[in-house]
Image (cartoon, rainbow, N blue to C red; front, side, top):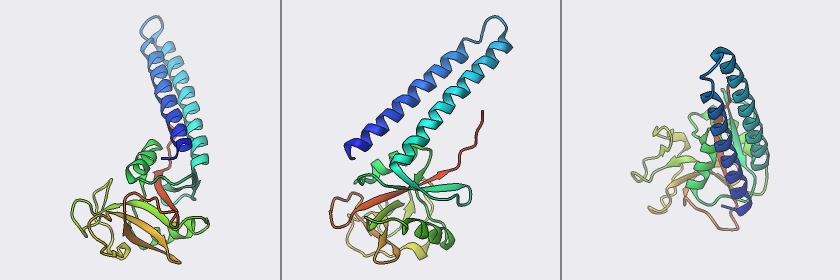
Length: 202
């Protein structure tokens, strides 16, 4: 992972841990005096701290990603910093923001994603969330373990090392299998997170 991206993610995680611990401490002190009043104050403080955390996460997302419009209750986030070259790091980044590498279920979703990513330049490969690592040529999504729709699979049968699925601009976006890490300068790589829209509980 590029050092600048790694630094941003470390700061976000540390901030999340600090605010979560602080909010929990406020709540635990609501055991004496007027418990109802103190509980209310605690809840207000916790919501404020969570709102600050939410704001920081949204700010960091704007630096790291290009964001799609809402599609069926979720958005897609295309990485825009120096590419993360390993699928595990891409998955961890998506998970940090409450999502996962994109899992395309049907042609409508594919067309929406293709229209979104073709707005941008400077890359030819976009990592999504499928692998055939468990069984060669049997493509499943990492998060749900569901089979990848057959229309999406355009396997090139390049051997057992190419276990990740990418959208490839050839031109026009299509899905191809390739390495789960990528460092070839001629083929700049991005990854695509799928993140459900948050519901505000406070």
